[in-house]
Structures are given as C-alpha cells and as structure tokens.
Amino acid sequence: MATYSTSAPVENRVTMRLVQVALYVILIVAAFLSLVPFYWMIMSSFKPLNDILTIPVTVIPPHFTLDNYTNLLTQTLFLRSILNTLVVAGSSVILQVFLCSLAGFAFAKYRFRGRNLLFTLVLGTVMIPVSVQLVPNYILMAKIGWLNTLLPLIIPTAANAFGIFWMRQYMYSVPDELLDAGRLDGASEFGLYWRIVVPVVRPALSALALFVFTTSWNDFLLPLVYLRSQETFTVQLMIDSIFRVRFQQNFDLLMSASVLAVIPMTLLFFTLQQQFVAGLTLGSVKE
Amino acid sequence: MSVTNVTTPSVPAPARTSRIQWHKLAPYAFISPFFIIFAIFGLFPILFSGYISLRNWTGLNPPIYIGLNNYITLLKDPDFLNALRNTAVLTLISGPLTIGGGLILAVILNSKLVRFRNAFRTIFYLPLVMSLVVAAQVFGLMLANPFGLVNEALSRLGLARVNFLNEPNLTILVLVVLIVWKYIGNDLVIMLAGLQSIPPELNEAALVDGANPLQIFWSITVPLMRPVILFDVVLSTINTFNLFAEPYSLFGVTGGANQSGLVTGLLMYRTSFQFFKFGYGSAMAYVVGLIIFVLSLIQLRIGTRDYER
Image 1 (spheres, chains in turn blue, cyan):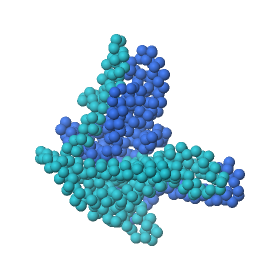
Image 2 (cartoon, rainbow over the protein chains, first blue to last red):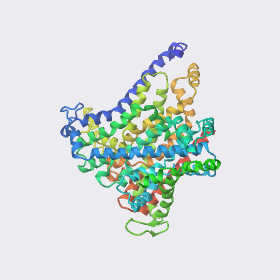
Image 3 (cartoon, rainbow over the protein chains, first blue to last red):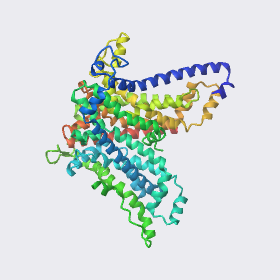
C-alpha cells in the first residue's frame, strides 16, 4: 500500500482511506455473521433446556452447566456413533487414497491401451448426481445383505472420480528420471509406486485424505438411506435422530452433540489448514 | 472380508524373465482395484437406473415393464413441478449471492489495503467445517419462535417476531441464508485461486492511471475472472439440485409448510426411500440429472461465447 499511495495525489490518498474503512466494515460484518452460529451453538450447549427455551434470550449462559454433555453421553448412543463414524471415515481415507493414487499413477506415468477411454469414462460420471446411482446401489446392498452395516458407506465411495483426477494431476509432477533410476536399481513396478512416488506426492495424498475424511464425517444422505438401527448410526445420523425423538424440544442434547461433532473437524482444520484449502479446491478448480 | 478381496491390488511378484511383459501389465494392475469398484458401484448403477426407470417397481412387487409411463407421469406430477420450481428459485437467489459474495470477499482479501487477511480468511472458511445437519440444527434454534436469537433481535428492534420455520413464504429465504452462510467460504477459495492468476501490475497500472477501486473491479477483475465465475455458476447449480440435508433437517421430508421447501433432492429421497417407488424415483433422478447436464452445457456455451467475443 505504502508504495503507491506516496506517489498518488493527496486526493487519491483520502479516497483510499475511505475505501479501506469500507472494506474493513464489510469484512468485520461478514466475520461476525460467520461466527455467530458457532457462538450460539457453543453457548446453548452449556445452558439447561429451560434457559434455551425462554425469552428474553440470554447471550451468556445464566446457569452454566455440563449436564447436557453428561446426559448426551449416558442417555444416547452418541459415543458409539462417533466410533462408527471413525471406522467409516478412517477406512474411506485409506481405501480412497490408496486406490486413487495407484490408479492416478498409472494414468499419469504409463502408456497403455484404453488409457484415455477409461479416464474419460471416470470423468464423465462426475457430473452425474449421486441420486442416479442411489436406488440401484440400495437394491444391490439389500441383495448382498449389506443394509444396516457400515460397508455401503465405505466400499462404493472408494471409487472417487475426483480423487483419481486430483492424483493424476499430481503424478505428472513426479520426474520420469526418478522412475527410470528406480527401474535401473531393480525396483518392481509396485516398488516404484510405494518407495518413490508415494513419498514425493505426500502433500497431495494428505490433502485428499483430509478431503475424504471431512466428506465422510459430514455425510448424511448415505447413512440415512443405508442404516436402520441406532447401533450402526454415524454422528450426523445420530444428531438427526436425537432431533426427531422429541421434535424440536431437545436443543440441550442437540447442541452438545453438535459441538462434539464439530470439534474434531475444527481441530483438523486449524492444524492442517493448508491441506484443507487444497482439498477444497480439489472438488472445485479442475483446470 | 470381501472388503480386502476387492481392494487389495493383485500384484504378482515380478519374475526376472518376464520383466518387459510385467511392465506392460503393471498399469492395468494398478487401475483394476479402482475400476472393479467403479464398475460395480459407479457405472453399473447408472445403467441399471435407466432399466429401473422403465419399470413399475416398488421393492415389494417384481418389476413390471411399463415403457415411458414413469416419465410421462413425472411431467404431470404437481409435486415434481413444485420441486423443480423451488429448486430453480433457490438456485437463482442463492447462486448470485454466494458467488458474488465470494468474489467480493476474495477481492478484498487479495488486496493489500487490509490487514489480518489470514485471520479473516480462516473465519470465512470455518462454516465449511460444520456439517449440514449441525448447521441446520443451529439455524433451527436461532430462527425458532419465540425463543430464537433472531426473533429476540427483531423484538429488541421493536419488530414483530416471525415464524421463520412455519411460514411458507419464508422457507426458501431460510434455505438461502443457510446456503450462503455455509458455502460462501467455498466460493471464496475458488475465487482466491482465480485472482492469483491476475498479474498485480494490472491493478497497479490502473491505479496510477487514476482508476478507482470500483472501476478496477468491474473493468479488470470481473472480465478476467469470467471463466472462474462461470465454473462456479455451474458448480453451484449442480449443488443446489443435489441439495438434501438442509431442507430435510429444517423442514422434514415434506419440505415444510405447503411443501414450500420441497426441492428435487428431497422429493427423490421421499419417492425412492419412503414410498419405495424405485421405478418412479429412478425416472426422477434421470430427469434431474439430464436437467443438470443441459443447464451446465448452456451455461458453459453462453460463458465461452461471451468470453471469446
């Protein structure tokens, strides 16, 4: 800023100052609006139900309590649902990162018959909404007895079209000389992938892993379709079911469950923000 | 156990004699685990869905071939037309707000006029971390009548309390607010990535020539960002047509008062997984998929034509 405001006329500098103030106002208002729901969720989780349901509304909990959390953990299967979600998200991460990087490596670094056709086939399905595949997959799951298990949340999503595209782009950056050197040293083809490629593309792998984990953790439609009994519920489905039990009156449990469901994601976000943003662009900028 | 069978790539040990052969087979071995799963759970269902859509299949009865009847019924189904209309309205309102808002925030955060840019960026990304279900519950609480935060604010300002969640005219508005809040960070990411490809000298040169920031925004930023904006428009249209968790959590599977929040995602779920009309639900999914495809094509066509001019 200092570089050009000194060379610009005084009049210009005044407008710049005004613009600057306006920009700050926009940013602060937007930041406030972004944060209010978080604040409200956290504060409400520390209020007894009575305080949540009364007017005038209190901005700071008048009778601070942790009961909502203890009730949530003792009266519902919330902890179990966290465990289920960890299983689903964890297996999805391992499967998707492995399958997509291995296939992405093949698409980027090998010439083979049908390469372009197969890749186009995968990319062509990206635009097709999930709902098109959902009914046949549901029927399939019913036939093979996977309904009400966590498998339909893990296996079908392993063939992630975005993931393969993302990995292929990254694999291009692996120098061919590195692979040739490995071959000269007598490495097997899989050894090339495992010992040379994986270490080089590690940042891309972790970005994909984070993206998969978040998607899996926050997914709602698939668990809703495939899961029936509470023991199998994922976190998001559990929150929804707490909501449905006593319609619209159990905000005490709901808000504490919400806080606990958001905390892991927030922690991941703050520790790995770089990869997180890279993962966001993954689903977005495809050039 | 079938898990491990499907997913572990079959990697034979490289035999010393067939070294060259193996090199040719390797890519197929590497892509096959992905493609086996892709074929079973990605590709086959797309085709099978078409097969189901030509049948009367409720899950209880065996499927009966009925030709295009499902599609014909669909075009006269008031619920489907209502859902299409609601989704279109929602797209037309929330799309420009998130994209425009994302672009404005990105331009501000990309300029050197403000400080604490990283802190602001982090704050704007934060809603992306919250799941849709949780976001819907928190908004439900904040918009509740009479004990919600928003109604409290309204009454402190001397305005009447509003029944946000049961008022048919406000359903779409509530969804718009939730979508904008939740996704503006996503648009911000896309826009920031795009802005970084604009050379900063352009803006500086314009400033020296006496252009004001608004002129720079309209005459330099927006035209250069056109492909990115266009891409974002396509993306947000697709997302709105897939919208499900927000209206489901806030208004239930009916879509709220007078079905005013019934969007295509909700109707598809209801048809297939509440009424178990698999045939009809599949036909609906195909038509919605086709609409998304055509809309994306139109948007891309219009965008590139203007861009080339």
